[in-house]
Length: 537
Image 1 (cartoon, rainbow, N blue to C red):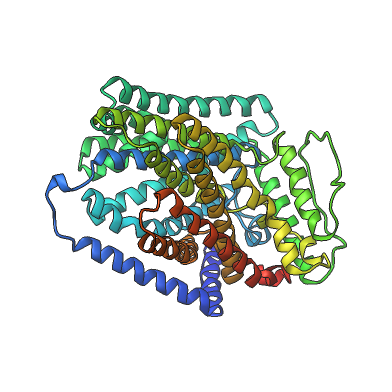
Image 2 (spheres, helix red, strand yellow):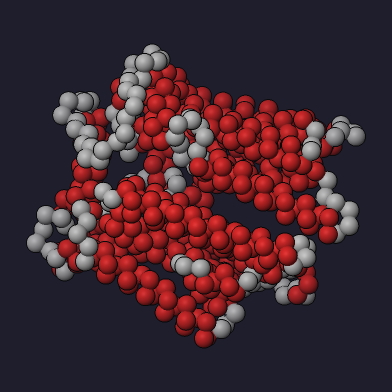
């Protein structure tokens, strides 16, 4: 145990030293800490308003439940393929070869993962002020919600380990787990929609369906949601009940995994060794001796790239990889999930509009769907195929201009929103019977937002390296996106003020033009991000 404590002390010390050697990251952390403190202090000093001046708490129930589902389902599905890991190369070098009990090493990994999960959740506290203003909750209640999300991330990590050890090498078991997961998600959506539909299809019915206590008995996500809101409502009995259920879930997952015969540590060793060799070879200017190990059988029908020359090969390589994941490139599971979410949203908005007398205009429903889709796109496309190329030596060694390599490597990431946007807003345009101009403008706005997200990711990689999408630095990524979107907002506002009687749909044209120009400018400014591997280490 002394060795593990020594390693922990040294990791903390080296982390602090590394932070001091990178002033930009240190300034970023200090800036975010100040902003977080101001947000929490400002939220705690708000005057208490009348209860009717806040949004219905059912909205908070629904949004929180959706966030937990969004964390859980993709993580478990991903875990069926590759498992989960909370070990690094230093752990492999110092712990895996040491005479320390595997259970102690697992306990060390669990504690470290729990600490990193809490740190990753800190950026969610930046939503505290908004939650306090909209729903009238207190700072401590917001902390309970954030704690629930942190508990979800940690619990899902353990469940992912368990399902991987249970289904690894057994396709029938993986298919069974996938079916159960889809069935649970479908039942939750069906329960909410049926309660909304058959109890008046109005706002009160929607809020009651979202806040239904029956949802809190859904495995994992419901239990954690029930625990968080039991703490908020100071319900001691329900708090004890859901705390016990969640504790049993985590403890059972750990015990089952610890007693399983999975080859999890071998997979960790293989992946970390391969990544380490690739990085070292790039830094030394060598590619010989790099061994990419593959133990899992893959169904391969077509081989070779057969297209492109120079930098364009990366685009066709990504297309080939897409075809191995999906028969039709660019059509992912998230594409159909996005369509389904928008269709359900449109149905709910139609019912809410008809229940209030005058129906909601179709153009307004399209704007709401566009806003929702752009927000979801932030999570669906936060990282693309090009970020995986940064871990390999080839993109740095190709004798092409850095801008050309960056463009071709990110092209599939840029084209994915094109397919999603056309699919989503073509369906919504037909469903809501909007004019073709509105549907086309929404498509191009969605596509331009995809360009901005990719440009923001490139800029973040250039400024902060590969830590950009973790923990507090996720908030820095969001700040970068807001800055990149400022020209679009300014142009749209100027057109609105200067041009009288302009149809609202045409206010999206300045947004499209600005987003594309800003994205091109960011790509040009950050073209050297692929000039050397050290810039991304």
